[in-house]
Each structure stands twice: as C-alpha cells, then as structure tokens.
Length: 288
Image (cartoon, rainbow, N blue to C red; front, side):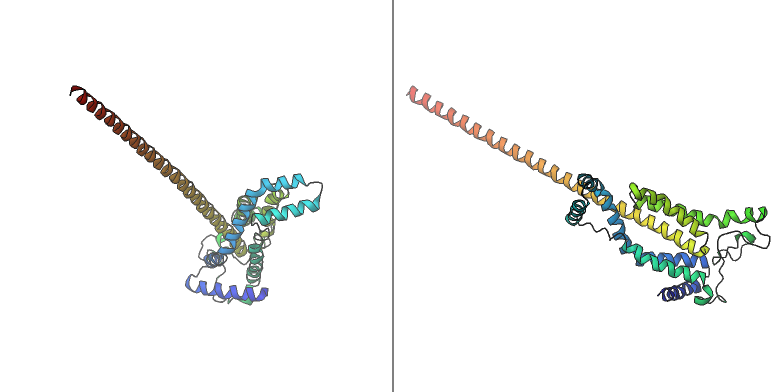
C-alpha cells in the first residue's frame, strides 16, 4: 500500500516538475493539491475540535460529579456527547488519512531513484545558486556532512540553512497545535511534546519531506483561521439578524401604540363634539 502511495505521488510530482522545473516548488504545489483533496476532512476535524473546546466546561462538570464512579461518568459523558452531536473520533479521521500520505511521501523522497526519474529531475531547491551552502539537496537529511567532518566552518556555513528547516517544522507544528488543541491536562503536555518530537524527527527526514510537513502546517493554520473567521462572520450575522428583528418589533409596537393613542384621541374628540352638540340643542330649546 505504501509503495502504491509513493508511486502515485511520484507520478504527480514528475508531472508538476515537467511544467515547473523546481523540486521544492513542485513539492509545495503537491502539498496544496493534497490539502485541497483533504479539505472537507480537515474542516470536520477543525469543527470537531472547536465543539470539544466549547463543551469542555460541561464535560468537566460531569467528570467532577462522577469522579468516584467511572462507569457512571463514562455513561453520562456518552449521553452528553450524543445529545450535543459530538463525535470524539471525528478529529482523528483526517489524521488517519494524512498518516499513510505522509509515509508514502517519506518513502518517495527517501528512495527517489525507485519512484522518480532522477536523470530528468534536479533535487536541489536552488540548483543555480552561486553559494555552495545554498545548493540544498531536498533528498538529503538536514545535518552537517562532508569530508571535513564537523568543522566550525562547515557548521557555520550549513547550520543557518539546513538546521532552519527542522526548527521551522517544529515551530509551525506548535502554532497549529496551539490553535487546534485545548491546552488542558494531558493535552497541554502534547502541545509541547508534539512539536519537540517533530523537530527531532525532522533531522532524520529528507529536507523535501520537512518542507512538505511545514507547508502542510501553514495551510492548515490558514484553513483554521479562515473557518474561524467564517464562524465569527456567521455569528455576527445572526446577532445582527436578532437585533434587526428586535428593532423591527419595537418599531411595530411604537406604531401600534401611536395608532391606539390616535384612535383614543379621536374617540375623545367625538365624545366632546357629541356633548357640545347636545348642550347647544338644549340651549336652543330653552330659548324657544
């Protein structure tokens, strides 16, 4: 299965490279295509995470109420989730889909000769760079290598470039985790553990895979911000709609009140006119 996924993305990557002959940009475009395909799943994950965050106070109350009886606690929690249409597995589905894709791309870049025609593809991010340290091979691992070993000159010339990729991968993982994961309890620990693990692991990944992971994080952050903005916009529209309905109701009430007052004043005037005409009639009879 992994070989099939790697083969598929090898075809996609080769196709993109034919039109845009830069390996790094081709990987970024492939990342965009993957994000577009998985957009609905990621959307569900984000919505599920937001609902879980909103329901955290109520869930804490249930946990506190049945803290001495785990069976009742689990039953109450299940009923609460069913009543509020919360699926705890909804947030895991996109991750399950992303994992084989990630492994497939890892296999593709780790064994590029098996899945790509490297005679036609240049694996460098900046193939025409004049500075040697900028000729970054995206199929190599981001650590200092060379016949000179770990010399100070080699470290200073490469650390600023190669070590930057794992650090950015860890930073973007932290930002996305902070946005999508409630920082409470064991989840708070994962907020820091996951980025640290990704940073360490990235040193043993091909740089191309680190770029894929970083861009995936950035697009996920963008998607999260977009969905949050849309939700806020919808909430404002609802609030404005409620306000408009209240204002309209007040206007109708005022209009009705004025109409009633006018009708009341009209009746009073009619009564006064009636009394006045009666008095005149009485006076006329008296004169006769």
